[in-house]
Each structure stands twice: as C-alpha cells, then as structure tokens.
Length: 299
Image (tube, rainbow, N blue to C red; front, side):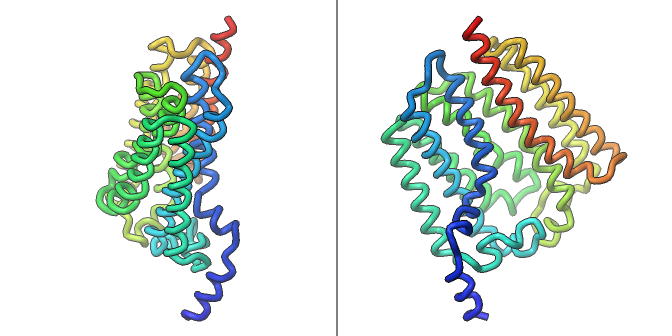
C-alpha cells in the first residue's frame, strides 16, 4: 500500500496542485473582489492594483483552500463529492501540499504589500487564517453553526478589493461583506441537505445532520428573507441606483422562491437546484452592482 501511495504521489501534476486551490471558488471570490475595487472609486482602478492586487488576494485564497484539502483529506475520502481530490486519493502528500500553501500565501502577501497597502495585506491574512485555521480546523467539526460563523472569512473579498483601492475601511464595503455573510448559510445549507448522508458518514455536524432537514429548510427560508432585505441596503444608502434595486429584487425574489420550493418539498432535487441558483445569484448581484455604479457615473 505504501509503495502504491508513493507511486501515486509521484504522478501528481500541475492539475492536482491547481485543484488544491479550488479555482472555481477562487474565481467567484475574485469577481466580488473586482467589484469591490471598481465600486471604491469614481476614477479608474490603477492597473497595478487591478492585476497584482487581485492576484495577491487569489493566491492567498488558494493557500487557504490548499490547507483545507490537507485538514479535510480523511473526510474528503468518505464523501462522493470530494473523494477524487488530490490528497483524498493520495496523489499529493500533506507535506508538499502545506509547502505549496505556504508558498502561495507568501507570494500573495508580498504582492499585496508591494502593490496595494498594508491594511489590505493584513485583512487578507486574517481572512486566510479565519478560513484555514478557525473554520476548517475548529468550527467545521465543533458546531452546526459552523458555516454561519466561518462564513465571515469567505465574505471578505469585496472588502479586500475596496481597501486595496481606497486604503481605508468604510460602511460601503462592510455592507458588501454583510451581503455575502447573509448569502452563505442558505447557499451552503442547501448543499448540506443534498449531501446529508455523506456529512453524517464523515461525522461533520452540519445542520441537516444535527437538527434534521425540516429545521434546516426553515432556516434557509429565514436567511433568504434576511438576504433579500440586506441586498436592498446599497440602494437605501444611495450606494447604488434603480437598476441595481430592480436586479436585487428580481434575483432575491427568485432565491426566495427556490427556498420556498425547498421548504415545501414539492420538487425533486430542490436542494441541489437551490444551491446552484445561489451561485448564479451572487455572481449576477455583484455584476448588477458594478453596472449600476458605472451607469450612475455617466448620468
């Protein structure tokens, strides 16, 4: 077995290391970071900040994801969704994966300190540690509210993008963080319902496992209502205009409809469909913020 494992690890290629960074998740994070950058200014974003700032944020996010792969490798091996990951299958060993994560984190921090500002770098580091250490190593196994508390780390990218351009904190980027913070529970709990048996097998105390599906569906519905209300706040504080308001209402009401369908249990596979819609919801909502911002500038 050891010989087979060693041979498997030798075959690890660049695609395995790319997979460690969870590139699809990082891309969605970078979209929100980009929107945060453009919303922070009425002038253009300097190309150095645009390129190297997002690269630094992306590298640090990839480092946190790689640590997640290392810590969760035994859990991943038990779950159908994750059992083919590089560490779960033994294609990459924990030590090289951690070294890879350290390299990404150091490169990301160097880029942020060089091309943005210290506040962006330290906030990014705090987000990395929050996800890789606080959430992955502790909260995920400690409480069914893991994704609610740990979601704050994943909500940071628009704040990081804003601070990279402006150099300071303000209410607007914190509101963007609040939107993602409210979005995370219904997004992830829908997936947790779909994968309930796997989380139970891996002994992860996700809400559907500890409190049942009905309880979780009620909370998805409630959090989606909160998300709809929070998503309207950019218009309420004059951060955005009527185009964003219309998009936020349409997208939010559609999300609420999916949450209601999931609650009622009237459609097959409603949980995974709600999860997939939630990804598109966040992407389109932030694109609406960006388009509305530049429309207002040209009026």
